[in-house]
Figure 1 (cartoon, rainbow, N blue to C red):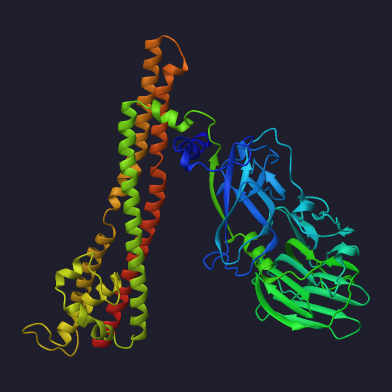
Figure 2: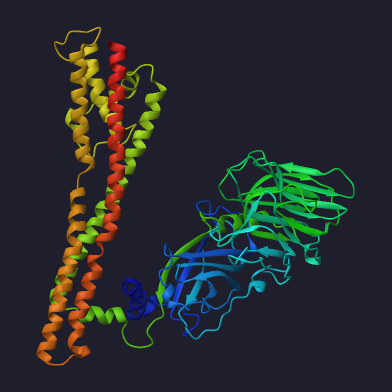
Length: 608
């Protein structure tokens, strides 16, 4: 399977070889592969309007976005981050690289990102077994970054990743090897991490201060606890919790402490990015990259030790987990904290992982082009059928998805109107039914007819057919019909039967063309297998004719077998699409069934 996946994306390099105009620059020919990484700061992405500078961004690799760990060095020593100009090397370091677990956590410093923009790129190069490691933790952070704890490896005391090397003097916390980003620190409500006083950790009022971390509190009642506290005899800067509410506190020169507390609490057992900044005489609290309030604070120099998970006085202990604790001896701007919060969590909209590509062949045609040239006529017949089936299935999935989306939107809008007028079941019909009655009854049976107000809503069609039957009996709408004051049980059952018939017809319409997807899903792999078997037969026949096992003899049949297998696997995305569409259809049908029962019950209550 890895070789098949590798062959698929090598197609990009082959196309670039065949069409020189499509080729792009390549940073270094000693590296065979690269991955494209795009940053989205637009409102649809990370929604960062400012321009972050010098921010370290987490690149989280796994099988979900990177399938080629085996093409790298086991320690990740051949990894390189290159700017979008394909020339400038970026500073980075590796927190964890585990090819066996198919997982990696990489930190790369970005000199600048354009606020509100989408489309800025960098490249991750790999595939050079002779490359020397270039991971440099100290250079990944700017001079204002006073401390960074990744809390790794899984055992032992954490080490500061910055050039200041502000390592702890005491480490009582536990280590969680499966934290948010690699390993994390666990606090039980009686343990702390102590970092001795250092020049880099000193708070200078002229520069400001920032403490940030990822926090997950335990699902037990939490008293007043300190997440991190810089304390000396003259003052303190504290990021902490009061119950489930995050607070920031400063004190200096014997003056009353300034306390700033978030209005809402954070959810237990969920990770949140929390931070405080002190600068220009103002204390600001940040939660998940959002400004949670600010307050003026008079504060002077503060030094002393930094205590994590409690206070230096042996109190205010934390019960919960921390990951990625950062201290900066400057007040980080909003966009810097937003970029951190929106690139490091499990949901990280800042970074978009693109495709992988291979270095162009130096001369001649690409490997994939050579393979396709070697496919026999029998293989091309099967590949052609599979290609038609695949694009046919994709077309069905796209348009069926659009249609189901319109149905769901229309149903939601109809239910809003229906529930607003729930005291009178006929109110929606009187308000909107006049437009519908202008069409012939057969128009409501057509899938391409949509109500002017409710679009493709199936619930409105169901309601319209049922309400039409009710009004026919109650108001005597039909020719010769007698006006009734109440509905008999027989009439109610007749209304239910009409709605059941409408529901059945609409269900058939929702499931239209789904059988074509099942044909592609069931038949595609078998056609691919047929091409594989035919290719193997041709291979053995060629060996028998030539009387010798050589590449020229077996290449055509082998190429046909492998390419047919690859194209047969096109049924896999069709299977995913079918299951997703089928689940949406089931949801819509279930909504129709529930609505039909509710409608009949309300009609029976009002007119019985």
